[in-house]
Image (cartoon, rainbow over all chains, first blue to last red; front, side, top):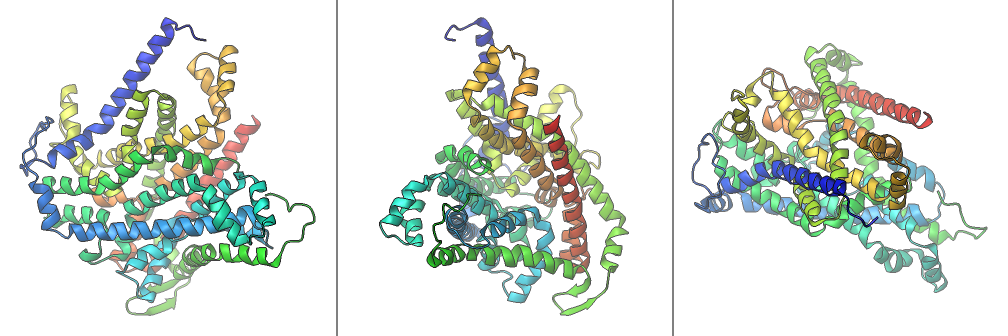
Length: 279
Length: 298
């Protein structure tokens, strides 16, 4: 149907304008946050001045030099990268085993992994916290990293992807005399790059933004991750919040996940499609 | 599950590799989910003080304590109210967003990227940002004065603080669930959409009723279930923005659990409260499954 009817044109115009209005609603709070981070005024004035102004970069300088911000950035980066690397690697090993390797009890083990998804996090936080106390891990990196090194979601996502790779590819490798783990590392894993990318992106963003668990186990200011630091900034000056410095800290916290989103945008939908298809 | 192919003998090496490959997952999930859940149940039957190492069984008294706590049921009612409102609105809104942004035009891609920003942003950043948006001199009032609404300090009002948090979470989760619907929509072959159009399914409601809904039923199911589980566990935004106040008007179960454990050192009661929450979440999600399977037979 190549003929363009007036109805079509009207629909397209309507769609585009609704899209633009929504984008405007969604961008304004963030836009305001960014322009505020380049201003002097500590106190908010009403109505807010929404015109872009570049008065100072002092808020960024302050946040970076006069708080533990670089340290918090390092903590967040270290934790998020470790969690991502471990969880994606372990998820792919197990996902591959559940998709391709034959061993006794495989199905029961797989359903056990899925069943852990039914247990909501609040049910285990008390026990997990006490476990951390008993291990002496409170206020350490491993308290945040180790419990997140395996994820049922990543196992499931990787398994779904490995089942879509044609069996023949691996059979050929088997005939060539490769052992099962060699087939995984040399043949299957390199073919699963989109699945690795999707699960790495979601895991990293989740770990970077995680709040409740780090709040429970990281107590000293030096150990804070960025979300804890943001919360700390909010309470640090009594009821008076230094909005401008705060907004600079917020912008700096958001940058990595926004960059990841912009660069890997196509994997966001793909990741969900992978885990949703073929139940 | 794929059946074993033919009568080919499975080598011991393959079995061993299989076990080794699933071992790390079982170690971690075994300790931090399965064991932790059982351990939590055990703690809920104890008086438990991890700092002075006093542990002794108290039977069901933690459960009695929680069940007779007015604040706990108050927080539970809040969570149910929150779940009802937020899940209903976000499920429809996310669907609307997905249909709206499911085009490959440059405008569509660009605006979709903007709308998705809150979904990749830290809840702490969003919460602090919206403390300002909802403040007396904030963005919301700046907009509402033009409509003749009297400026209000939304988060300090016992009437408006909770609806404000609901609004914020619909704002951030609708784009997140939009992605799930988009994945679902993109798995529908376009030939089906074209044939539906030829069959005269033209108006939006019919298209939803006879076409999108049946095709996306399982996506809808996931969005609703994940929405319920997430909403019942609301914590970050409340903790940062209002800490349950003003006057307990935003008190939710996780704030109760947090305070019992980490403010009052009452770990047994916190564990009991978390188990009661678990049972309620389980009932809600199972009811959902029942509902959706009935829809399938209809």
